[in-house]
Image (cartoon, rainbow, N blue to C red; front, side, top):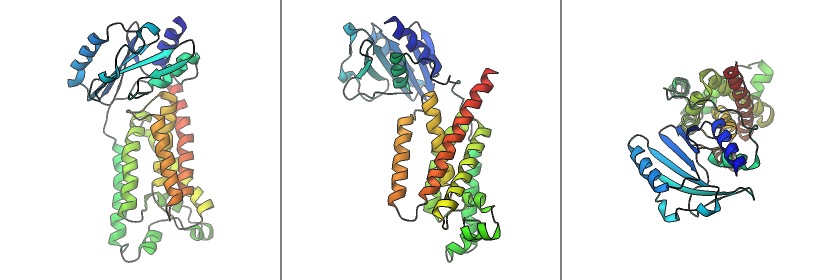
Length: 326
C-alpha cells in the first residue's frame, strides 16, 4: 500500500499535478480543473468544496481514488450527473495491479490513468518530467500562417483559379515532379505548403491548424512550433514527390505534423488542454483511413508530415527538458 501511495505521488508530480495535501493533487488545463483525492473518507465535504469552484473554472473534475477495499466505490454511479463538478469514483487493486471505474464513468482525465497505471507498475522514472502548464497567449504564429494560406487562395482566384485551377496552382508553386526534377524548381517543396485546391481544401486544413496549431504553439513554444510546422511540411512534400509522383499541394502535411507533435507531447507529458494521446490516435487513424478511401488524397504526403511531426516533436520535448535542467 505504501509503495503505491509514494509512486502515485511521484507520478502526479512528474505529470504536472500539484500536491495540495498529503494525498490530494490538482491540475489545471485551460478552463478545467482536476482534483484527485486518494483514500479520502469524506467525499461529501470535498464535493461541496468543488461545487464552489464552478464559478472559477469551466469544468471541475473530482476524482476519488480508493486503494482500500473497505472504501471501494464508496460513491454510487448515480452521483455522476454529467455536470460540473464531475464526480468520479475509481478503485485500484494494488495486489492485482488492476484499475477499475464505475460503469458509465470515464476512465481517464488529464492523463490520470497513465499516472495510476505507472504507479501500480512502479515505473517512476520512465516519464519525462512535466513542465508547468504554459499560460494562455494569443497564438500569433498560427494566425499568421492561416492568414498567409487564406491570402494565397484569394490571390489564386483573382488570377483565374476558378477558370483554370491546375494552371494557376502550378503557377503559384504546387508540386509538379517534372518541374522539380527537370527544371530544378525545388522551391516548390516549400511553396506547395501554401497552395490549396479550393475553399473546402483550405478550410479543412485551417480547422486542423487551429485545433492543434494553437496547442503546439502554446505548449512547445513559438520557435519549436515553427520548426515542427515547416519540418513536417517539407518532409510531406518530399514524400509526395518521391511516392505520390503527381500534382499535389496543401498544408495538410504540416497539419499532420502538428498532430504528430501533439501525440508525442501527450504521450510523454499526459495531456494537452484536455486532449489525450488516445483521442489524438483516433484522429490519426480516422484521418489516414479516410485518405486511403477518398480519391485524389495525397496520403503519402500525410504520412510523411505525420512522421516529421513525431520526430520533430520528440526532439523539441527533449531539448525543452534539457533547457529547464540547465
